Image (cartoon, rainbow, N blue to C red; front, side, top):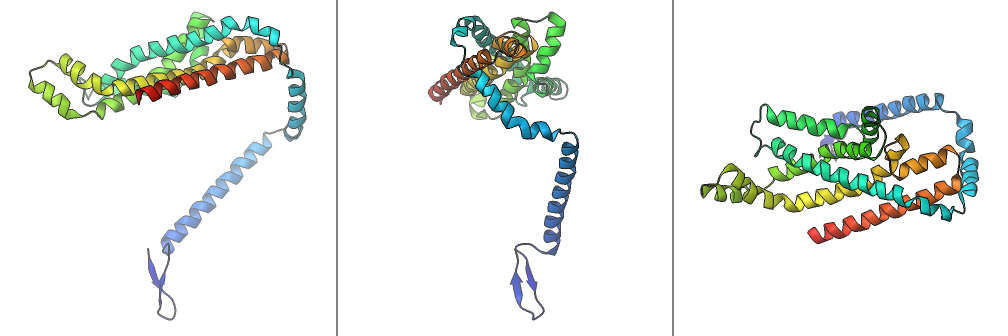
Length: 272
């Protein structure tokens, strides 16, 4: 904490010296200026009449959407099942590809830190940087609409997420166990199987369940772009303004998400 002397020669304790105070207030000034400029840009491109009229529109839609069309539930069994399959199979495929990618990216298991590790990190970053909806749009253009495109979109999106957490877990293992197994004359694969894999299994299980929980949420909207699942029913109902059907679909999606959250919480609790 800086100390300064006033005109009488008395020492005064201050939280910041003059340079730090100037930097602090300059940062606030720059932040406020940036906020004002951004707000001005947003205001110029916003039709404020629709914003002020939004509560009335929302109330009108809510009135049209209630009560939900409960008899429509019979047509949602297969779409919600497709959504669960997209999330589950996409997660399994992602884990199948993420595990070797993680071992190639970890500093203590990669065969080459110069060539192979940067390539593995590039795969992790590139798959994580693009949203699953964009992957779905690209895959639909390549292989056509349907559940298979949704599975691949979820899988590609999940590879980077799972591989990043797994390679960090690999780098944080207890190296004493690895050294002990290596000292017995074990091969590289035996060291990996008996010294590394048992240490990362809890992290692997936690990542798998957590990512599956996330993919349940993401797979519910992939149908909006034609990748199958209950999102396709939601898109069809929105196109014809069938608001009672929309409200029922949203209830089903909410129930599926809550159920997946409960399952993942139970599994993570059992693992921990």
